[in-house]
Length: 155
Image 1 (tube, helix red, strand yellow):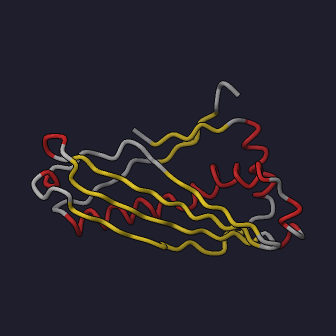
Image 2: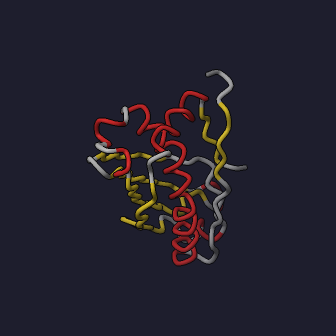
């Protein structure tokens, strides 16, 4: 089942106000950490079914930066905690065409852009990192499901 992010019409509009000026400048893996918690349980991993992200945002006159940190405790055989995985992915957007971005964008617009466009940009890097890391820690690579954006029906 895909990871679903509910996005309201207002968030889409706010995100677009930043997206008009944003150009992807860089994506980097900033942290990649894994630990086997139970080797026997790690032989049969259950899929990750919840995407928990913490986000740090930085905005300067001409750049918009996001750091997405993801931490997972992956269950394995007999529903035991098998692996601990932690990734941090950074993404930088050049927004110099907006003039002074610190004045041009509201905090709500910057957050909406992060919840839509920035997360969509870094998600393939997260998936690849998790697949590589699980393959190095145990016998099989874990493939995370797709990321989907859905209209928030309540907004």
